[in-house]
Length: 251
Image 1 (cartoon, helix red, strand yellow):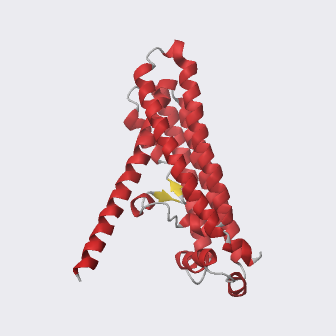
Image 2 (spheres, one colour; image 1 turned 45 degrees about the vertical axis):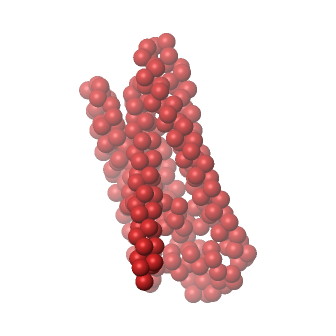
Image 3 (cartoon, rainbow, N blue to C red; image 1 turned 60 degrees about the horizontal axis):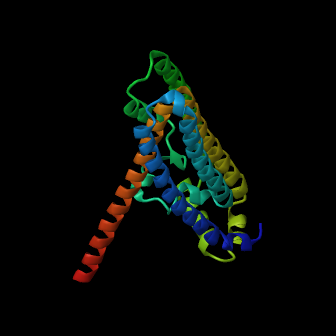
């Protein structure tokens, strides 16, 4: 692959950050709609279509995110494992470049207090199935990491992933030094694709088990958690930056 394609990666990854900022603005707008809908839609039979329409639009919003993320991951999978567009707090929640699917079930039980016995049984079965797939993907990623004898994956990401973004004419050196780099990138991209598919499929199946009004509550909880963690992460980073500036000015 010509080095010029890597020199454009910085622009491409910046485009994902721009996309994410716009996506988060729309996410907050959807959250407001979900909160208002819960207060407005009290007659499920007469307003079920309106609720389902909102649910469909919210799920499409998440699908848009994963489609854009897939394009970014294909461009530079190493960057996906070390996303600079997330704060350290947000990155602490990540599992294979995204949220852990098991978190979905905690959000359901915390936000929906009128689950039927049948729903609880179906959710428990789905949770068990999801956990098994999580373990399989975690093991697959571990095997990929073990296959990289030297350096470890994290060092490889820094040496390869960041250099290909910021350094011109580096690709020839990387190909000479890492003959299996393309194979590694493909393996990592496949794991990310499967993990994202598990995330989206689990969320969709959970929504399918809930009533429309329950789904509104669940999706509200998802949006609230995501935006709250992002805000807290940004606040912490701002405080750290202020402390660094004060320390620097003190010298």
